[in-house]
Length: 420
Image (cartoon, rainbow, N blue to C red; front, side):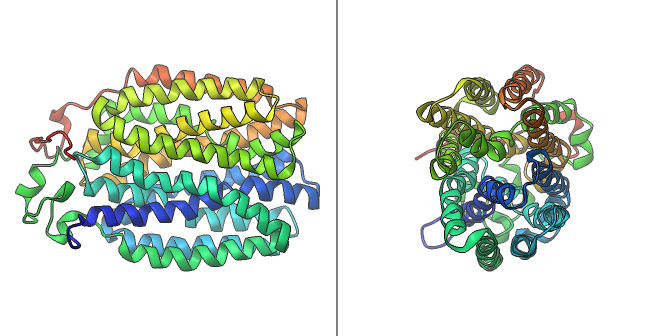
């Protein structure tokens, strides 16, 4: 405890700020995307390939980051990632040929980014059981708020310093601040003499027993529940980055001014903040699967909306809806992994699903760019994205909590409803 404040909420605050900077910078890529195309004349598919490589690399290395978080704790992992992400972004200021972004952003920055989401979310999962959805929602809302706040900042910096100077500014801030924030993100409540959700107690196996069942990684991956969740998140993540990369150029194609086009991503971020906070709280009460079903349904609606939106108000409304769905899914993902398989190996299991499923999201941006380059429109891409979320909704019906007999250690569950 810190005074009367449960130390877990300090961890949530640190994770919030890490994700604010990391994801806010990531989703400012759409602003730099337009600046790079204007200067170098690269095709949208080729430059989207940079983001696709970035997505693939950071998703794959999330497993390594999760495993290292279980072994070393989050502090060293997040700090090292901050250095790599900062170097990659700063190095982008020197880019002159297409292969430079592939190396600097697609590899170096991606390795740094892999140490943001999974270590932060796995650590928050360890600190909470009864309020897990709320805690994960609050922490992950940092990414959405960054999505809202940083694209206009990127636009202003590009307009003032040029895109090269803007990349230097982002890289230096990321490297310094993430290393400072890493110091307040502590491994788990047991290391502070606590148990999840804030009750004082000894750090013994008995204290852990009040939390939930504990599955080994081997036992979890032998369960049908693990593979069902993997299929669900693979389907919904394939198209998830398409709006984040292509929404700004799509809006500009429709005649929207550059500044207002950049705020499309900000509108998405506003919706995602609401989704993460609202669904985090709601899923503690109605369950993660119903929450995910609501999110997937809304995401289908949003993609259909993108296909038909032609005015600025319609684009804003659709962006808000997509952000709400995206944020809701993000809040439920690490929480449902903790619910199904426990806290002991949360870093490895969250990282494993992320590493296996999230690389599929690299297909979305490059696929949408390919469709645009060959048809002159994003319409077909939006409809395909809607179809993938319909598939995710169908697969969700197969995702059921695992049976205890497969667990390496099946501990009794004593979970009371959250209290104010």
